[in-house]
Every structure is written in C-alpha cells, then in structure tokens.
Amino acid sequence: MGSTSSDGSLSSLRYIAQSYNHADSQASALRLILTLNPHWEGADNKIEFVRFTDGITNTLLKIINRKPGWTEEQIDNEAVLMRAYGNHTEIIIDREREMNSHALLASRGLAPPLLARFQNGLLYRFIRGQPTTYADLVQAPIWRGVARRLGQWHAVLPIQNKATPTTEKPTSMMHEVDLDLESRVKQEDDITAIQPRQPGPNMWTVLQKWILVLPTTTEEQRAKRLGLQTEFERVVREFDDGKGLGDGGLVFAHCDLLCANVIVLPRSEESNKSDDEAETVQFIDYEYATASPAAFDIANHLAEWCGYDCDYNMMPTRAVRRQFLTEYVKSYSKYQGIAESAQQETVDQLFEDVDRFRGLPGLFWGVWGLIQAQISQIDFDYASYADLRLGEYYAWRRETDGSRAQAGEEIPLRERRWAQEA
Image (tube, rainbow, N blue to C red; front, top):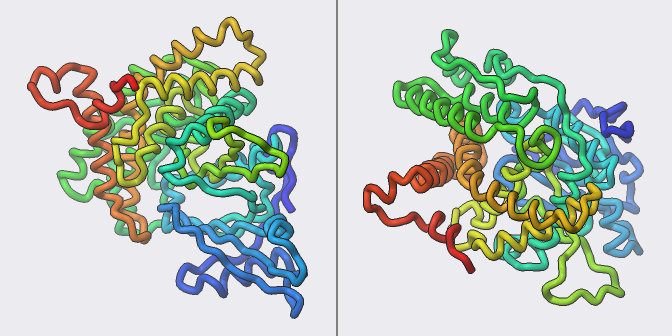
C-alpha cells in the first residue's frame, strides 16, 4: 500500500516490476492483481475483468473478485482499477506529477487510494458510482454537482510551485520513443521556448512542452509547429496575467473533465433529492491535473459538453453558464470563507473570464491531438480531432478580432451557440 504525507506527496508506494501487455490483456492483468492481492488466488475466488472503453489515451480495467455470498456493494468495495498507459504517452504526460496529484487528492478524500504502480500503469481503489455520458453533462443535477465539486477542488488544493523549465531539450521527454519519432525533433531548433510568468508545472509549461515535441519531418509540419508556437506566445501575453482566483491567478485544476472522468456517486437510501437538485460527483483520472487559471479549467469542462464528436449544439448558453458559475462560486466561497455579499461580483468577473478563455481549450487539445496522431496505437482519428479543436481556436480568434464579421462570413455554430442567451 502507498502512503501519503499531509500535503499529498508520495512517501511510499508499492512498485510491481511487471507490465501490462495490451496483446495479452487478461493474462498480464491477472498476474498484476495476484501480485497485489495474493489472497485472491484459490478456489474460493472468481476474478473477472471489466473493460472501460470511454477513454482515448489509456486502457482501463476494473478487476473484481466475485467471492461466494458477497453482495455487489462488497464486491465493488474490494474492486481494483488498473490503468495501463497508452503508447508513448510519457511524451505528453508527466507520470511523476500524475502520481503526486493522485496522492494529494487521496489525502483530501477527493480521489481513491493508490494501491501500487507497475511498469506502465497504476492500480488504485474503485469508486462506486456511474460514469456520466455527454448527454448527462447537460442535465442540471449533473452540472450542478460538477460545479460544486470543481469549486471545492479550486478552493482547497494547493498548487506546486517547483520550477520545471520549459527550455529543456524536448528529446528528454522521449526516452522510450522509437528513433523515427525522436529524429523529428531538430537538434538546431527554430523555436525558443518561453517561460511563463509563474514557475511550473502549470498548463502553460505543459502546452509549451507539447509544442516542442510536435513532428518536424516535413516543411509543412515545421511551418505548423512554428505557427502554433506563435499563437502560444500570443496567448501567454494575453492570458498569463496573474489575475483571477487562486495563488497568483492559478488553482489546482483537473484540466480534463470530460464525461468519462465524472462519476455520479450512489444516492443514499434515504435521499429524496428533487429532479433539479445537484448530484454528488467525484472526479477521476488526474493525468493532466496541474496549476491553471480557474477560467481555463471551467471553459475546458464546458467544451467537453460537446463530446469527442464536437457537437456544438450541446454548448451551454449564457444563462446556463451563469447558473453553473453561481453554483461553482458558492462552493468555492464556502471552502475559502468568502462572504455571500461578495459572491455576485465574483460570478460576474468569472463569467467574463470564462468567456475570454473559451477558445483556449481548442488550442490545448488541438496540439495534444497532433502528437497523439503520431504516437498512439489506439483506434481513434486523432488527426481529424486535432483539426476540429484547432478550428475552434481559430474561429474564436476570428470572432474576437472581428475578421469573421469583416469578411461577411456566417458565425460558426460553436460561437453562435456560446453567444445564445437561453
């Protein structure tokens, strides 16, 4: 078992010197679980594997032991989640930071306990509950629950201030990557990495590192990478201003609140919640958790209402966003001790901030998608997804600088829906 100190840092976590094999899933997962729980071996145990398929980066298995006479609740309480990392995802995900984030959250009761790590993944306790769907996210009881939990996260979790320079050679992030991919990073680079206002890790340092490892094999790829660096520098100048909630404008953020990472917890038997009252939710999967402006984390979650298919008809209107932010600020204020009289001003400012940040998730996940298109073996069209997300960013730019209107072009659906009042 792992243990954590009061600030969530890992003091010890069991390491299992084995790996999960995607080509031999059940056998390799069985070896891992029996190493973790040797008492699960024997005739009285019936081990089963449940594969979750909502993610597009990792393999996630729920491992259960159907012992005779146990109820479903007892089985779930002993269940283990095994998450095996996707191919070469260490290029885009700092696994040490992820484990420390998970440990911090577990120490505050906001994440399931970590049980062990292995060569290419983690084992941790299962959370009883139901993952949401994209159709769920737009339902008031769900988004109220998300807003309340996110407000708690941003209010109570400390951020790391340990500097992680973005000027390090990007090849240091590719220690297990094939030589073809590594050779795509030129030794004499045409990009000078910029250092954000506040030392990392944070969303700015993460995005800078992602841009540095974009492919550079062709002239087209080099031009795209250089253009994205130019956009990134522009964004940092405009948005990395130290303003907003938290420590110097940064909070501990999830940064990946898609539907599969929102779990609705079971209601108690005596619960008599109305149809519009908030559900209690928990967040899972902390690969991208890092310091970030609160407005980015919120705008990023609201963008996920559209799903992987980017159905912009699902974007929240102005009225719904204001209700979401009201719930969020009530929760944030509760944990921060902010007087009720000051909350409306906070809602108003945050409404403007989230509006300003609405295009940035497209840049963030667009760059991510370009990398995944090169390294992932998962059956998902990352290249098309990257184009869609980057298209959101550039459409937002054209809307805010007036060039779309000047050209007499129709407002894109995402921007039109975002501007809709009710």
